[in-house]
Length: 363
Image 1 (cartoon, one colour):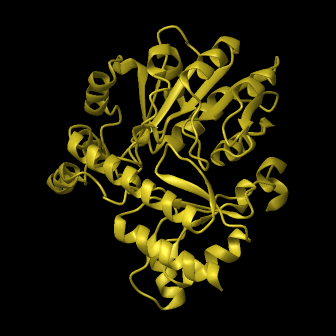
Image 2 (image 1 turned 90 degrees about the horizontal axis):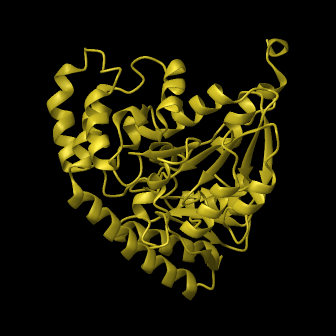
């Protein structure tokens, strides 16, 4: 059947997520493994979200609200934007795909950083458009370099802020400079999946630009600090016309009912977000200190993960850690062949990771 498939699909490499704990324990015959590979919240979901899910379980025989009316109302108040400026997706990944399918053609181009969230490149290739790849600068999006790549065929520029897998941010001054260089007919897709973890005061307040930038789409998720990765729910904020265009191809009932009510409950639990951020900051400080004691360089992060340079093949290193019950993400697919990305976990998880890393590095 391969002869029926277009070449852009045949040459596409599938996405390989972090290995599940169950797979590791079954493969190596071990217990008490930890997963620090997929940037999930180690505290889990908000207790309010869990209570709400239990309450709504008896209603899962009904189709969900396809308009996500109540969640959009809450987000509208929370973000101080109109509900007409919001789209809810089956994870923010779905919205990335909707954007590509809506605005890209085989004749158009998309500008992407070379070591950013790999799904951008995958989706652009899947729709048959051309990828223009721009190297990072000091592990950060080179926004001015990306702006220089804009031509008459450019339709979308993808930016992750904070960037995955480096954890770096572009500051408000650079972001505003960049926006001023982008023509109105080129979409800027700003992926802020990790924005709730940012403590840098120079991080851009992106929503303030929506009133004057009709070409800006902001993406956020409930998978990270809100701990709802397993329910798949995220959202986009943009000009009303852009939202209406994306809704033309959005599948009906794309977001399940439990995800919707859990997201609403999560937004009301500021204490859980605060605890999650505190755990992240404490874990970050601990891991920085341990990496320095081990003589390992790392990229200072504004997210809930750290890119660590281990001076040896990342695949071999991560496989050795697997056998010790520690799952991290090797970064070869991001062209960091000697680096791993580790999610900041609970104190006991961070301790276990460092203990395992010391064992692996000493042999």
